[in-house]
Length: 245
Ligand code: ZN
Image 1 (cartoon, rainbow, N blue to C red):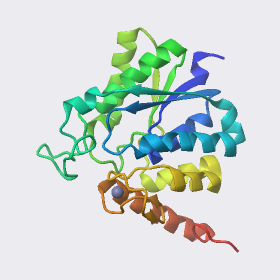
Image 2: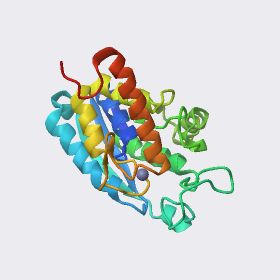
Image 3: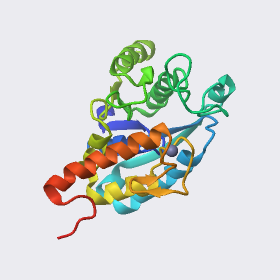
């Protein structure tokens, strides 16, 4: 198997990275996953990771053959840096820089650099992430230009030819649900709703139409809006989610 047939997916256990994982599993022969334990305030995403992977293994035969090793790297240094609502007791909102307080400066730069280091050792060429700049939270390290520049820097710095793939870059959250359906049908949408976690408050008590979450934080608002638009579009053609003739 050539390096180009192997992919490493930045997999957090959230909705976007789970769709990015499905995208990779539909294209590449061997797909490994990488997560980071960086002292997140809420460890729910980390807890959901093995659950999502387990369900992919048992419920999706074609994908299960391709799903390889899962890696989790400790990245405590991000918590040591502090000052983010994702790692500290900071209120979620807009910060002084015009960026949400959930912003962890340079996080994706670190994540992809470390992913490339793992991929280098494991003979993997494709690095896949669920970043998106269409209806994103304003994080500059999710932008297409940032990641293209990073790809060039990593390739120069490691003397390799990695390709950073971001299949969600130009679609919105409704498009992410639609892509999920295209890749894995309603079974995969069900998995997305039931098991992936995006809520910044770490809420897995409240079950909304689109999954578990507080329903109020910016991540829940994005997910809820995307689901609403996706179901509305689906209703026009097929009677909506859960509709049976
Ligand atoms: Zn929430």
